[in-house]
Image (tube, rainbow, N blue to C red; front, side, top):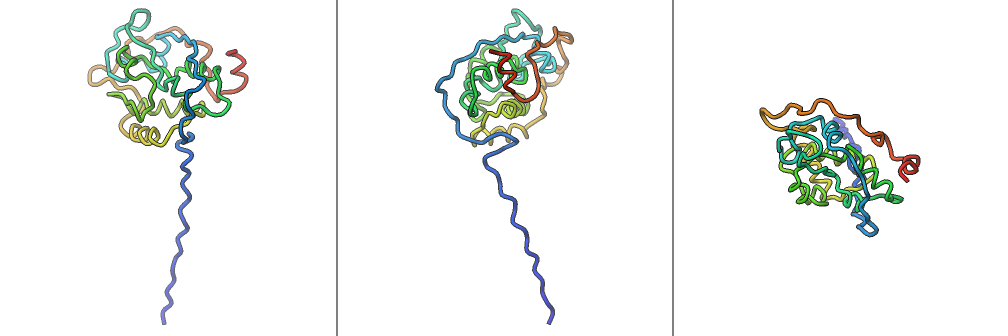
Amino acid sequence: MQSISFRVEAPPDPVDDTRWRGIRVAAEVGRSGYVRPSWDVRDTDIHREDGSPACTAYTRTPITAVGTGDGLDREHIVALAEAWDSRPAGFDQAMLRRIAEDHDNLTLATASVNGSKSDPDAAEWRPEYNGAWMANRVVEVKREYDLSVDPAERDWLERLIGSGPDEITCGAGNTGPTAPSHPPVGSYRTRGSFSSALIHELT
C-alpha cells in the first residue's frame, strides 16, 4: 500500500492590531487639559521644507510669492488639538509646542481650507489633492511623537498612502519651484526622537 504523507502548515503569525506602521492603534484619550501653544515659523521656511512647490498641497492653488502678505496660512497637518487627543502618557505642553514648530507637520494652505479643515483626523477630513503626501506626513509625525491613530483613521490613512506619490504635485505645467533660495531653517528643527533634553530647551 502506498503511504500518503501530509504536510502540516504552520499557523500564520498573529496580527498585532495594536500597532500599524509603527504607530499605536488606540482610541483617542480626549481633549481635557488642552491649551493651544504659542509658536512661530516663517512661511519661507515651511515652503522650503515642502520642496518649494509651485502650489499649495491641498488645493493646488498657485503660489506666486512666499512671505509677508502672501495670503497663505501656516497649516498643521496633524492639528494640534488632534495631537493632544492622541497623546501618549507623559505628553505635555512642551511636546505640543515641539509639534507645532516641526516642519514635518507644517505646510502652506489657503485660509479657507485651513479654516474648514480645523482639527479632525484623516477619517473626518481629506484634501482634494495630494492625499498620499498628507497621509505620509501624518504617519511620520505620529510615529515621531508616539501619537496614536484610531481604527477609522488608520484605515483612511492606508487608503490615502496608496493613492499617489509621496510628494506635492501641482498638475501639468505647474510643478516647478517658485522660490529657490530661502533663509536658513531655525535651530529648533532638530531631527530624531523627542527627549527630555529637548523639553528642557523649550521650558
